[in-house]
Image (cartoon, rainbow, N blue to C red; front, side, top):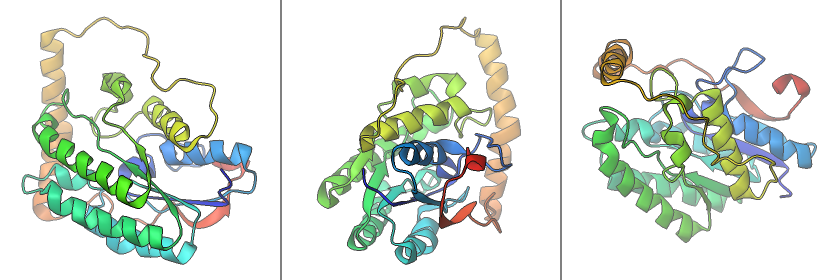
Length: 256
């Protein structure tokens, strides 16, 4: 665990939506993981160049070369989720692009941590892409074997099937969800933690069928329809945004 530097690349998941931080930016699992690494490895330099809405091709074209200029010891790489929800998505082609990026990152000397996709079984609409996500995940595991990467298996995290782990848009984790992913990431990295990421939340009364359908209708109007509109127009929520932490700098108390 003698990492002196850590760079996180990806999309909104890695940027940290919807986990508000104390400095007005989103925090997220990556920042939380960096904080835990820094606790046992003082002086850790950390950068997070992930930007919401980015497709895998954009991550590979824009963020991977930036990693090459920073030469970090550790890189976390999660991408492809925004692509897979597109009707025309091809998980095989996406995996080839992902592998090219991993090859470049490993050639640069960085240790790479790969993240699988979530299981969308219980998510309305998104459950239709479950097969594509599973195929993509199988490719990611094969890539991890070929390039000696660690894997954070989000698919197997059953605790994330709890709706309370997800924000209203059903696409981004709540602070508790990010907390659990950070714990799982630390486990994969061998960073000691005192909590169990798999511990279920306290039971709550099940929602009635009517309440669930009302929730689905609200979600479709408030989130699905606007997303479809942006997709048709070729607009992204990350357009014109800059990375929240583009340089490798030490974590300070105000970051926590």
